[in-house]
Length: 375
Image (tube, rainbow, N blue to C red; front, top):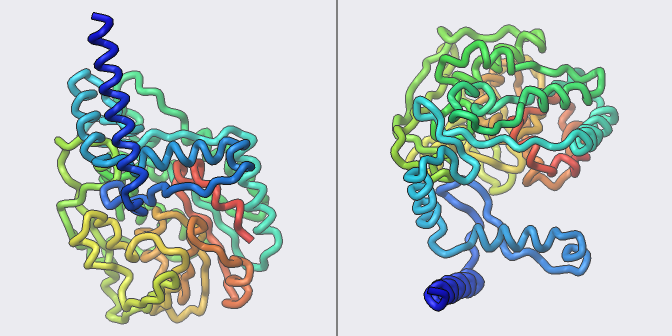
């Protein structure tokens, strides 16, 4: 029996070794269409990174992200755990009513305070009329009642309150938790994706307008159009839970204007006369219908005649929110600090920006440290 287990162990180790060699010799993939995220490539080695543990962490992520047939093994793992009665895979909970909800892992208080220190120092040195901050809870918080029984889930509300308490007093915090919670029985989050729906973004837009003193548009002023009923998002791909129904995606088109806007994408030097990328509906990441997905800097010239300008420091939650601002601002600049390596202060000064809005979902804001480079 001992020889049997030794042989099994040896075969397993040989298999892992072969797969790692294949992984190291194969061309590295930089992006996963299935998970809609950038993959870890081979990290650059340095003694300092090795001592700090950063190199080891990045190398582990590299092996995990570049493992051959990764999507196949994720599916196998998911199906195996379902047979064992587990309701979570790859940090995605299988909830009630077909909801797949990504687990929230918040910062500790010191890390949160440090992150907010970067933002406060940046904000105190810029000259704009209004400073806004919106931190959006994800589905795992608003739909806590749909989580599996006894599923451990950190409180995003506590985290959001901590962030608010750290902000400079001249920054207007926009509380959308209460707004979204009051609409929790509506379709405000996708079931297979980590984003909010256009309806969720619309309710947040109404709250933003209330705080900013802007007249919001009613739903009756839009043509609400379903552009796909076959959207499987990042939670679906990441979890491997395949026996769920797809989501639908709606867009809101203003009824009172036939004028187009002009959108410039600085990273690939392209442009468009629409806020919606309909070609994305033919791809895996159909959420890219909103402004073509994530870009380092996007400049939007709208049909509005009021000559007000806003910079939005954001993650992908802003993609379906920003179209609602088109009637309130003549120019909108979207900056994604995960990809932007220029000075935001210079951008604000050069374009005579009136307002600035930080718009993140709570999970991305907690996990991502790129905000430390804002200047």
